[in-house]
Image 1 (cartoon, one colour):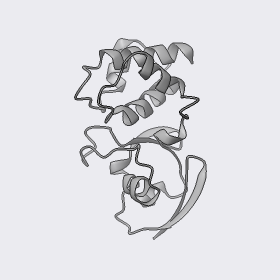
Image 2 (cartoon, one colour):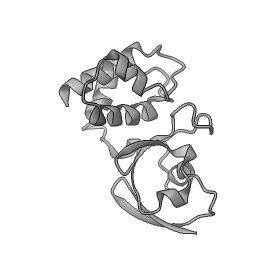
Image 3 (cartoon, helix red, strand yellow):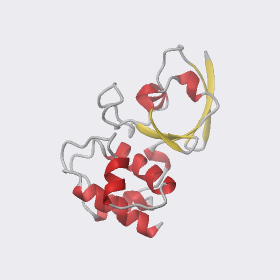
Length: 152
């Protein structure tokens, strides 16, 4: 099947088998390796990207479902010289250790801040429950999300 999608503002038309996952297109075809594959079962959230402005776990989105969509990956939200406010907050609040979950956690956190009117520790923890971190214990992640929300 042939699909067309925009990834980080660039249009791509690709021929892919019908059972191709969005995460495989992102990582293997487009070589955007900031989107991680952690579990292949939609449990960990490491593969989270934005599809048409909303956070999705790209390991459970088929290529056909992404046809015509606008996709934003971690590579599309900031640069080394101009971090996205959420990336800056994660750095400032020491909200990462090994970094494996960080891209998916940041993409979910951005969606959470943009689409939740009242954020507090409870709502952040609830909003991030589909993203697993095996290193930090979440306290600094919650702190980073609230810090970025305050600056938004």
